[in-house]
Each structure stands twice: as C-alpha cells, then as structure tokens.
Length: 264
View 1 (cartoon, helix red, strand yellow):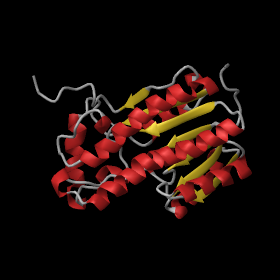
View 2 (spheres, one colour):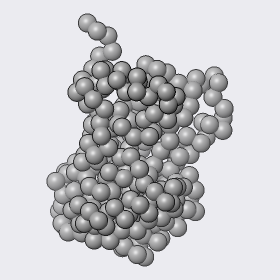
View 3 (cartoon, one colour):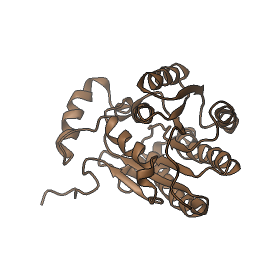
C-alpha cells in the first residue's frame, strides 16, 4: 500500500487539554490538520481546540472524555466521524501518575492507573481502528509509553505506572503487526522528563524547584524537555515522512535511557 496522501487530515489527541497532548494538538494544527481534542477536563479541551484554530487547524472540536469509560470513548469517536470524518491519526496520550510501594498500594489505586493508562489506550485504539477500517483509511497511531516501561526509576514507587507503560509498549508492537496489512502504522513515543504538571504530580510544591535542578543535572542534555519537544516527534510519526515507520519506539528523553546509572 502506498504512503498516505497529504493534505488536511483528522487527528485525534487524548489528554489534549494540557502538556504534551496540547503541544501535539498545536503542532498538527500548524500544518492545517483537523483536530479532535479529547480530555476529561472539558474546559482545557475547549481551550486547546480554540488554540488549534488560531494556529491554522482546518477544523477543531473538543470532547469531554474520560478514557476509562468505553461508552464515553465510543461516543467520542462517533462524534468525531460525524463532524470531522474518519480519523487518519490518533495520539493516545491520556494518562495519570500516582502510586507508591507495591506492598502499600491500594487495589483501587492500581485499578485507577491501569484503567486510565493502559485500558484507556486500548479503548481509544479500538475505536480509532474501527473507524479507520470502516472507512478504509490508512493512517497512523501513536501511543505514549515511557522510559519507565524499560527501566525502574531510582526514586522508586512507580511500579503500577511502569507496568502500564510496559504494557503500552507491548500493545504497540502487537498492533503494528496486526494492522500493517491495512496501511495503519502504530508506534510509541517515549518522552523523558518533561515540564508538565504530570511531571511534578508526586512532588510536594515546595520541593519542585530543587527537584527540577536535580533532575536537569542528571539528564545528558542538561534540561527537562518542553512539551513541544516530544510533540514534534509525535507530529512526525503522524506525517508522511514516517510512512515506513511502524512498531517502533521513538525515544525523546534527552539521553536518559542511553545513560548508565553508575558514575564510572
């Protein structure tokens, strides 16, 4: 199957109201794509859609959507198809980060993180793929993984988050093989420490400045990413320039995964 045709296309972004998701919305808007911004924070989604139109999106809509809910995800994709047409691209990005040591972790917390990060990605891919296949639309799906899907954090307490991201990476590889025959490419983004609210979710506010300095000193490139840094990688994976890339992990982490943890 030849590469996808250029021109305005419908791109769906979950968790699109803030952080990397919002930056990806704006990056795709600048090339004239049609954007569907999904977020459980409806006000943030509406602001991101408004920003997309200001940046050049051909069209942009916002949808309140909690990716834990199959009914909400199914309804959102039905609205997207009705208003913007079948999606060409999906950035399955919505996620949360909360946890603690496994022996202290409540089952409810485990389920919350799993249902949001892993099941949420599954549900969004499920309905995006259904819409793509029904319309015979080749396209591209990008799912947000993490370095924690490959290595453990030195600070600890990230077992459930890491498990969801490793699961996403495995899911991406399997889907890439399953849907290659339809011309649908599926890849993972692996962003490192990025200056977003999620980055500091488990850090007391009074410690954020100190931790930012500490983390920056440990990243080979010497700084945290801005949301626009990984968003550019997403936009590339959702473009014709990546038409022969599938089943891959695009690591955008400032060198974290390349660095040994010992100082010799």
